[in-house]
Structures are given as structure tokens and as C-alpha cells.
Amino acid sequence: MNPIAFPRAKVAAALEAVTPDGDFEAPSSRVVEIDPRSFERERILPAGAAGEHGGPYKMLRTQVLRRLDKLGASSLAVVGTAADTGKTLTAINLAIAIAADPERNALLVDLDLRKPRIHRRLGLVPVAGIDDCLRGDRPVSDAMVRLGGYPRLAVLPAREHSADSSELLSTRRTEELMLEMRSRYRDRVLLFDLPPVLQAADALAFVRHVEAALLVVGEGRTRRDDLMRTVELLHDVMIIGTVLNGTREPVVSYY
Image (cartoon, rainbow, N blue to C red; front, top):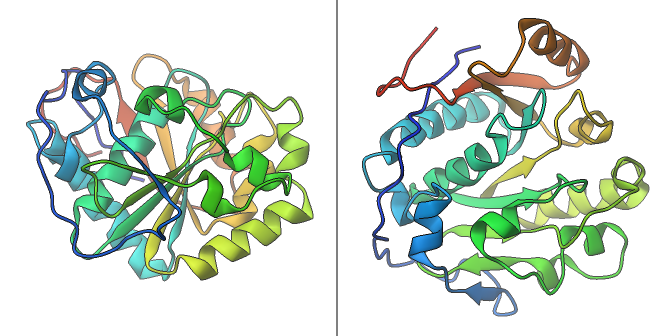
């Protein structure tokens, strides 16, 4: 496993305009215009993964896609050992970097149902969420949104906290929904932001539905014993790499 270190510095403020190559989503997908100032505040990459901090995520994207392609895989869980390791930000920016590749599309799904954050970080107010889809109340098309100026990127946010999240992710409906997503969106890399492995049963209940996992650890936050325990618990899924988050080093580091 090769950790990759990212700087803490803020992302560039301006969003670059990128023209879509074609219709990425069905007409029913809602397009949400984003606030560049909030994206800068949340350290979210500009469109096209541009700016001075896009480089490390593009390098991460290249390694992730190479390993997924080698496995013939298209679904990836982004997981962490505990809270505050930066896994949600990593998932968001990795999805943006993947969608910046003109030959790739990305679908980012918030399955941290205990504490969904993707919609808050993106400034979204979901009319429906993946939680509604898992309960069979809404179709995926109702919950899926696109971000204005981010072609080839779609987001499936979670609408609210789910107290029964681990049970929800263990249902037959979840299995059916995963099969639907993997068959319907064959042209996309599916990225799933999951709760911390050591703090909830959710990740272990869900990882059997994905083909690979990316493990995010926090510098000065993740204990070695917790990391080893997490790897042990995830033995049923291929861990294609680890990301070292929160380092102050200005360059990408390999170990």
C-alpha cells in the first residue's frame, strides 16, 4: 500500500469553465449551481481538478484508476479508521479528479449514513437522498444531482442521519440497488464514502458490494494498532492503497 500525502493549504478560489463532451445525466438529474467561495472554504477542488492543489489528487487518481483497471473494477469504497481523517474530502476531490479525465465519468455516493457530510460540504439541499433510495421510497434518478461547471461528475447525497444505517446497508434492497448502479452506470467509476471502520458496523456491512477500497489515514491522528485492525477487518475487499492526509509536506510522498 502506498500512502500519498496532501498539503493543508487552501485550494484556488476560481472555478475553471469546462465544456461537457455530451449529456452526462438523464434530463431528470437536477443541476445545482455551486458557490466558489464555499468550495474554497471547504478545500474542494475547482472544476477539472485545476489549481495548485489539483496535482496531488490527479496523481492519486492516476494510481487509483490504474489499479482499478488492472482489477477490471469500477467501484471503490473510501474508508477510514476513525473520524476526522479527511476521508470525505478525499472522496470528493478524488471524484472531481477522476471526472477531470475526459475519458472517465464519476459518481460519488454518500453512504456515511450516520453522519452524512457530502451535501453540506457541497452546499446541497437534497430533495431526496440515497437513504430514501435504500428504503425503496425514491428511485436513484430522483436523488442524483450534477454540479454546475463539473461535467462528468454526478453526486448521490444522503439526505439525513439514519439511526438504522448498518441494518439498512445489510438489506436485500441495498444489494439490488448496487447491482442496478453497477449495470446502469457502466461508464462510471462509483465512489462510496463510508463511515469509519472502527466506529460503526456500516462499512463492514457494505464493502462486500464493492470491488476495492482506498484507506485514508490522518497524520498524527491514526494509531498504528487501529490501522492494522482496520486492514484486518477489511480482509474481504481489495485495499488498493492508502492516503496519508493532513501532512504539511508540500509534495506527494511515497512509502
